Image 1 (cartoon, one colour):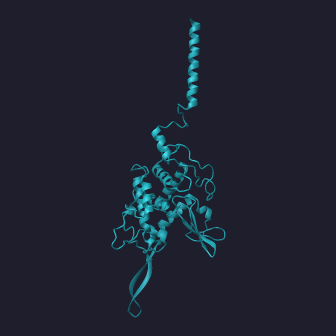
Image 2: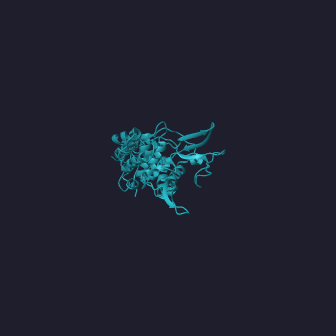
Image 3: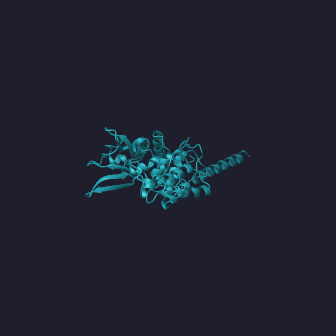
Length: 331
């Protein structure tokens, strides 16, 4: 009898060991650090929102993509390998929108999206700007392509470039350094300007500069000359942004262009800003204070909730199709 019981115990232990080995091999049990299996619906959504391996700033600044650019299976935009962070809404939105609007450029990994998100949040806070406004300018200027570049030549020689996520203008010297801008930009190497975080900070500084008095307008006043005669005199004064939003100057420079296609640049930014603010359930106070763009006589007023041109209708649709965030995600 005892011999029989010993055999039963031996056979039971062997069967349990075999079962455990089979389960471990086939991944039926998820352990700490392992990737658990995903429900079919979640797998389908993950494939739809898949993010690839474009390397943003992971090599030396400005050298662009490095390493494998294939998309890891089942990776959703904004997915993280750690606990959710307070800025997860901004990160997820950046990843999702990048995936929808990119064209012939690699997608961003979650870590790359977090790096851009951190830069946007930091610069927005530093310069008292809405993150959605910074993202709107980024989308408009580069389609979120960190390697975007446009050159300007004179007499067959390149003298300036716009580059990076925020399309920062750099007048180049013989050593590929910027000769324009404030003390932050002047003297900066082109390759450093192309670093995403640096580029975002430069864009935020430009927006804040024009908001805070960097833009100008011509004003005509009447004054008395030394003989007591009235004279009309024109002079430059800080722009009051009465018929346009301050971010118009990001494209126009110090003076607002009130004619032709450029006149509605601030509206094009506004519709993107509005769509991003909706998706993130975040405030965009700049859209509720003052005029957005000049009014065309006889035409309906342009508003932030109504994109006009085909490109902006498409972009707003792509943004709005991204997943929404909770109302406290950016608090």
